[in-house]
Image 1: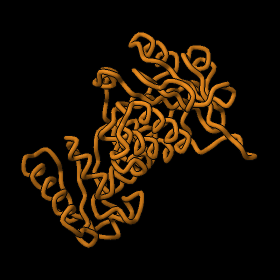
Image 2: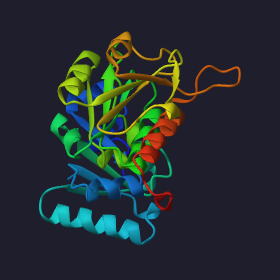
Image 3: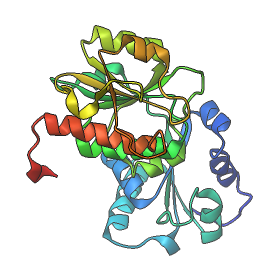
Image 4: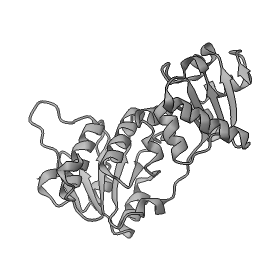
Length: 276
């Protein structure tokens, strides 16, 4: 079926998913881009709807994604639509999305998924403010072999982990790493019960992150750039560490700081340099 009208009800509904309130009401979000849609399908996610723009499709990978969506449509699992370029431009968060857009249900993950490894390696981000930072952290987490990400909410800010910008900035790695959102106090209690060492990052710490043991079951806790970590984390952490700062600024970008510390964990876990 070809959709050519900008006033089509389906087009309007997809466009409304740009709004968080509507996303939360429907429990649906948008995935766009070739890598992102490919990784969603590889992870076993079955879209409720899929939209293709033939004018923007190109390459073998696009053909593979279209083939999978066609099979899902034939099985009655996914509604598949072709749209014109103007319609796709209205629906897409970004213009260069490779001509493929999926509508998927919110992915509900369980805490048990964070304990799949014998020695879990987790990240906690407390009060993340920017979807792009969360997505960038997911990319680094995937590269570093992290087992899961906890979004900790101390101030009721309610980080939107289903924002299409998180999916985009993660390059689809949001589908490879379990991500859980819960209040800080619950996150602390769960980590303590699971026997996972809590390492809090703060500029007030006396020790550098390179000078402490970051081995064994571990959760690296990162705070927001604006407010740092909630006191609940600082009071209960097994270790507090800092990144050395030699200039006039007092903080790094959240995703950059996270990458530094995650790869120190990787180094201490004796990953061969040949793997980098």
